[in-house]
Amino acid sequence: MALKDILLHLDGSPRDAVRLDLAAGLAVAHEAHLIGLFVVDSALPSWVEASALAYADAVEADALIGQLENGMRESAGRAEAAFSERRTRDGFSGEWRLVEGRVAASVALHARYADLTIVGQDDPATPRPPESGDLVERLLFTSGRPVLIIPAFGDFTTLGRNILVGWDGGREAARAVNDALPLLAKANSATVLAINPCRGISGRAGAPAADIALHLARHGVKVNADHTVARDISEADVLLNDAFERGADLLVVGGYGRSQFREMLLGGITHRLLQEMTVPVFMSH
Image 1 (cartoon, rainbow, N blue to C red):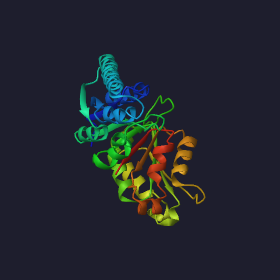
Image 2: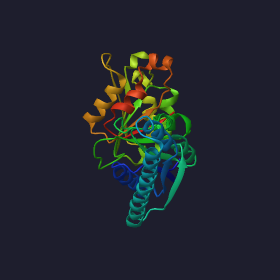
Image 3: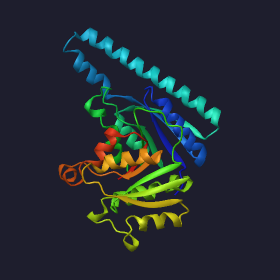
Image 4: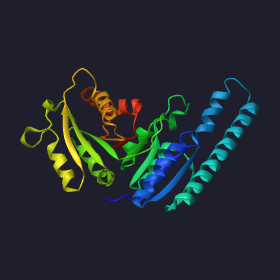
């Protein structure tokens, strides 16, 4: 599979510039069509109104909502201008979409018609109505497409040159590796890391993750297989620490469900990665 349609979610935040820079680079490298999407959040005005009425009268609440809606439109205009300027400068194929609706549902809908969706890590410091929260996790589990999440903090000058793959031999990990093949094929180097392989991760000749590394090598990926035993810290922390030590600029992992039972078994790996990420993370479910 090649990356031919990439969806980029912009929301008017200062992190838009970071996501746009990385998305434009991918669009150029893969000769892909980049779609800029801005969702005017239909849930936000009603949420603000309910909150404002506890402290102000209806007239003041209406004025506040009007200011909020105008602010969202202005943010959308600035995002569109930045997207158009970058498209002209870099020469990639692209289009701009402005829609109104619930953010998570709208992004998931548009994501189903793209090979990859790029979003920002949820920032807990940014207040959102319950209907619009947890964008990344909702997108991951409802769009049916891979998601590239860019951390809420930090600068990233490269993406996908040195990739770390978290491998446990499960369905989600296999799906993530397959979906990430276009990125892995262009990487300068990739490492498949099995954590605590004594728990059942298989490999040729007893080497954990060797099977999947061999599969990737047949696709032309420059890949190594490695494993580590770390029972005292979470798998998510192992992955993040290893990514830092290897200088990885992308982490590829499977996205696991967040039911209480699954979290008991897996320790909430997906949830912790989404909270603590320090490097862009490519996930599939």
